[in-house]
Image (cartoon, rainbow over all chains, first blue to last red; front, side, top):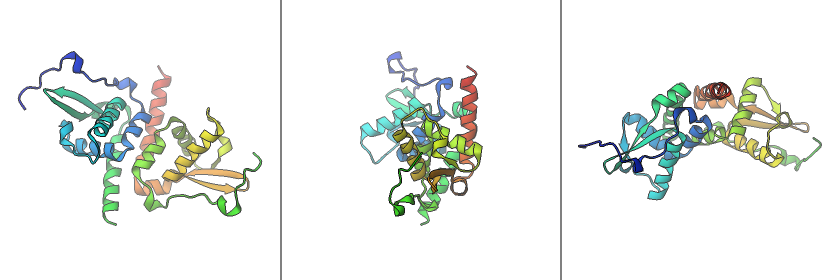
Length: 119
Length: 119
């Protein structure tokens, strides 16, 4: 990727500031299997991934919906870089508000995958 | 409360066995403010509380719905004792499946309450 040019103002997507992030909304965002999968992939990557990186077994509009729920709940930050919409976990914000929570959810998801995969 | 007694055999409420409890369903159950409040009260009590113990600012049928979601997700166990429907957290099951998760959610809820109350 060449430039990560600052987006024109019209392309800035709305994000809740840290103080407006609510536990209930975060839990709701994480409670969907597709969204949890996206969060796990972002956590494993540790950086930003484009929307097109994710191949979910749902329509494009449903995928867009899931990313919007994650963004509006404060779980991810979405930024346009060129023509790509990049996604990253708001780890610092979540850790400041709810220490250890995301880590435990990710651990629980790993354990569940191992458990169900081993049946 | 007098009786809203269903058929005798119908008094055993369905609960998922431990192996059928899913992280996504647990997170969904915890993602509603009323349900999270119920879980926090059950955790603070440490034992069983009757449905009538909880005074939620919603209709009786909505309250019943919330308890059903908590039960069907595996977060609580509901047992009839005489005419009372008693509720208790399935701490052992949740801890075995998702170690530390419920504790982190409860801590996060406490922190959020302090934070928002202090505004």
